Length: 197
Image 1 (cartoon, rainbow, N blue to C red):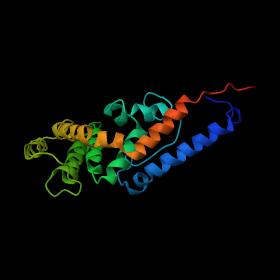
Image 2 (image 1 turned 90 degrees about the vertical axis):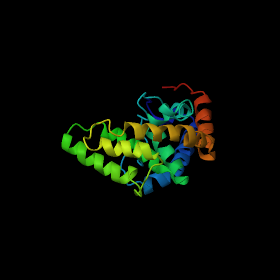
Image 3 (image 1 turned 120 degrees about the horizontal axis):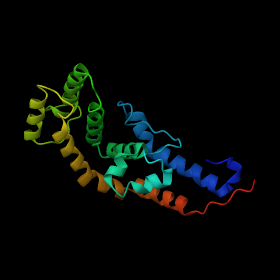
Image 4 (image 1 turned 60 degrees about the horizontal axis):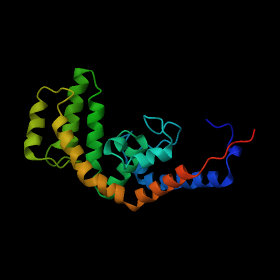
């Protein structure tokens, strides 16, 4: 991508370091408090999203749609950190668990994981109980009698809609995201100087 860091002006490098530091602080709680593996991990590398866009474009894209946020590893990590501040991270954790669940191919793994997800997120008094109606809870319980990759689809859809309509707009209005987006916009707007080699 670039030959050397020396080709960049010092101010760009300083801004990039500050940008990385602020994002790290924003996501720090997520890294420390997550027991779910992929949810709380933040990786600072060149592949920030499925589209391969640079990080600034990725951050700015999160406000375009909830789907773009969920398709970005960093977006999921930032959103998870925000949800933790609102004590509602179980919604995202359930949605992510369902996404991983759908990838399973073994019938025995499918059945055991389905029961684990149900016990953790769906049943009454679950440790991370998601906010779904009684009818959806009972439909999901019925679906577990013969688990398939789609047995959580209705509950996952309702949880996703809840996050998109409720938590996502608050995330976009949060000071942490607005600050991050402002830095990303500034980084995107700064003209890159040609290297002299």
